[in-house]
Image 1 (cartoon, rainbow, N blue to C red):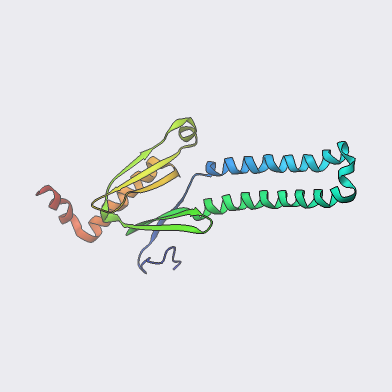
Image 2: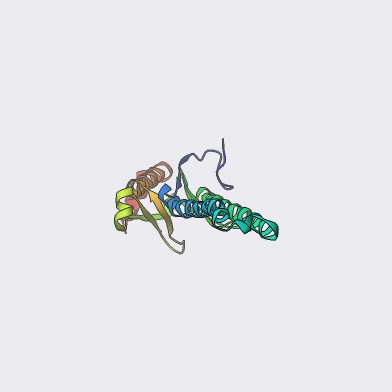
Length: 186
């Protein structure tokens, strides 16, 4: 069995791994592509309009500067993809795990038992989120446990519904129908 997180139990089945919607990567990819275009145009056009740049000392500065620009742009795109890939939500038969990759060297992992879920609210804001069907899923908890927010998740309404269904099946499995009647007696 593959373990997705450290506290995953042997009999705990991973139901879904949730990554942010792919549209989140569009801004870094478009920005990186634009920077590549500028770099390549400057590699072609600068020597045509400034021939002195490809001779003597200027050439010794020009090539390393362009190489560093290509390197840093490639690193920028790679780091943005890595942040996207490592930032996940995991729903299992017993837990909800949020692995938040804050930056390249900072990660926050939060775990919540399904029985602590009180309510799930899905929201889409704006035309892009509605058109591409992504949004935020707020998982509200009881007590002092902080709420979970799965940001920019694909199919937020379906995801919220699935989480609530998993919570109900978890409660029935572990507490039976007795748990649901217990709340009605208050």
